[in-house]
Image 1 (cartoon, rainbow, N blue to C red):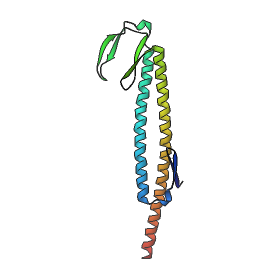
Image 2: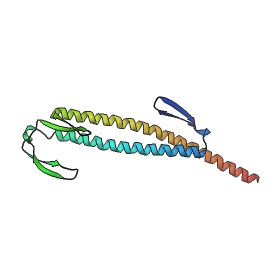
Image 3: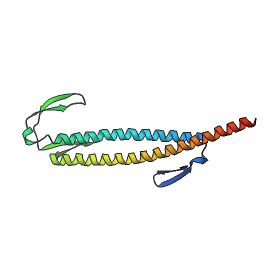
Image 4: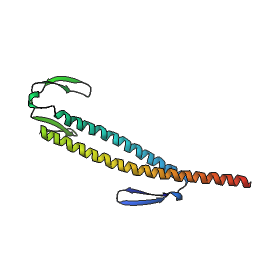
Length: 163
């Protein structure tokens, strides 16, 4: 596999790796390593979001008419809570992003979180596919780099034998 294809948007670019010198291959591999790091960070952030949506959906299962008036912990910050009483078991306020909130009935909120989990999962699968392709390309670059280094060592050995 000495040729790679990079599909960034509508254009398809093929590069014959054997035509690149060692420095160009090294730079290409470093760029791929950086991209793979970004993909890993993105996957981690999406996994955290996925877990939060799943937890929110699960928490909704605990709200029922019998829970009305029961004490709950209300988060003020990520690490500070106050006690409160559950006054409404029919509807909840859902954070739908960027400072917007929506009032939904329990089933509507569950459906919302299910859709969000599915969407995040799809995005994670897309990123994983791109990451796998980038890893294959990085491996092909590594193989060509190894081949070129062996050729250089052989050339150096041959030139030292003729001297």
